[in-house]
Length: 569
Image (tube, rainbow, N blue to C red):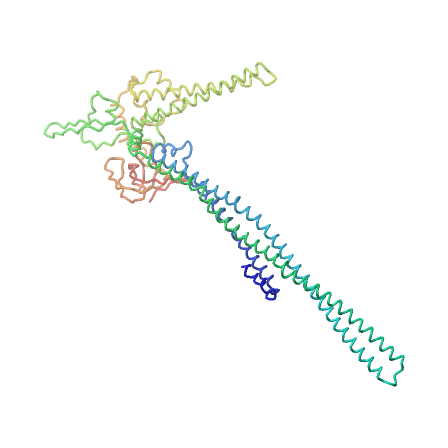
């Protein structure tokens, strides 16, 4: 400590020349410590910025993509809570950015400026000290020089006096030589007196300068250095307090972010989520009725049990009768979905879906078409207004140039309206408002069938009788025959569908119905068709083994870049 260095005040002779060197090294070390602390805080701000950036990227990465299937999943309270957590984490990242900004402005910038000022002050203090040292050394040299000159002159005067006395005592020396020796002795004595006076004057001056040096200049300089060093120590302490305070200032806001996450977690309603799942995936099928007892003592007769499809669309109609043995029946939408997968297309009327899901899909399609119609109508109105402007101001453009575009937009509107009417008819059929399609609806549907050839599926057209009436029995009978004979034979030798990903069985499933496949918990298989909304996923174990499993029984990993087919596990 500099106070210890100032012990010289009691005994000036104890102060050594190298004390300036020691103090210079110590103050430079203090500046190095300050710069090291600045570097530490700067690296902390970089870490805070990097952490905030990573948190923001993480939050953005898991945000649902707009207009995607993933966005639809966030209607559940648990998913909404997750979105709230992501938003809170984004705000949390913002607080770390605040920490970085405040540390940079309140510590780094301030200390960097102070270090420059400290270096200038230190340089000035030590420059004054060196200057005082040089001055006292110069005075000391002058004193030594005058002292040696005085000593030399005294010796010369003594020798001249001795020579004069010797000449004066010698009787053989002339009177002129004696006089000359006497004058020379007087000159030397005068020179000695002058040197003595000069030496005395310089000695007094040196003593005064030395007193000023040790009692005024050096104490003042050391005092300035001590004050400078103490200010540095206080400054670094204040910076450390600011360092802690910057963190403390954001703690309440970070606490609010964490409270927001807790509040979002507490808002999760498992009953509501379960109800949403029920509404999303309820099929509308009625459970199949009891199987009648087959009495082999009488003529073979078996009544086909009511299935969900006949209950939902053919209530009050006579049950289908099949002679001979009958297989355990799979729910109709599974079998139809298998057919549509083989054909490589989805029915336009979504007849491969259960009634409730089919109704939702049709309603969604109608809403989309209405939006497109409104968009086209807005475009038509804009073109019409532009045409009116051209008619009033021909210099702005040719009105006839817009006729083609206007006609094209009108044609698109008409097509969309016909398409909407077709889907509205199917929707009304599902909702029970139109038990059978009218001739007008068939004609409208036929217009689009000619433009877009219908795929071979179980659409409403396939369920019409020759006279135009709808019969569920004919539809089912036709479906059974087609599935059992023609289509199976036609597609047995077809190339297998390419794999679009893999899946892992979460539970063991016994595929006892036709079209299903058994899986064991933990087994890995290929996915060849993802869930179309009916709750079933089509998978493959090997080239010969493929079928459907409940989507909830497997965890699917789709390969979005898959282009080729993978036919083996």
